[in-house]
Image (cartoon, rainbow, N blue to C red; front, side, top):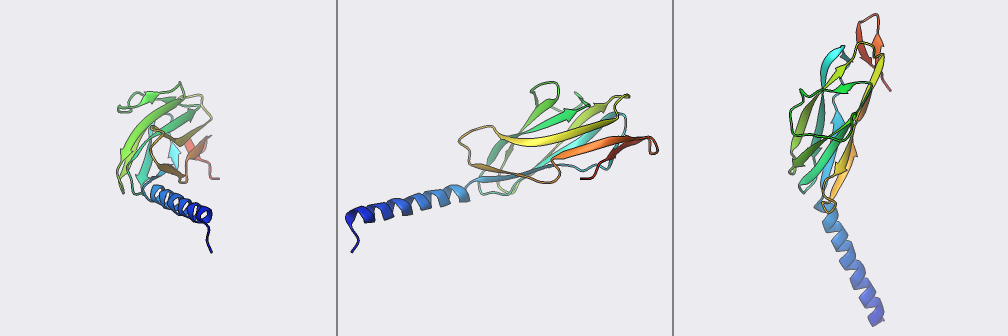
Length: 156
């Protein structure tokens, strides 16, 4: 025989499971990645930052791109926010099954022998149910090649 207390606990458990299932099936699922360019040259270059919402809800988030040993170029179209000299934030609002890309320009100075670019996702609204999935690559590293006279992607 089930007691009243046990019945209450079972009811609460079922309600909680239903609530969690509802949240998980109505969240945004954001995939994000960088284009994997094989090489770059000295001077002005660009890389695409990409994202896709494969979830069942809208996603409102930012992708943060970080540069090491290269300089962000203001040829990049607005909107973006400068976090510091090396980090810039790009806001995206994606509906279910939408994909977006942002062309981000940067400058490689003459004296640079290696550089890297990385991307990470951040929520813009705490209450938005979002899951972030970092797809390869989210970090790319390049070294100068005297033989090829350009920067070559370092494979992991």
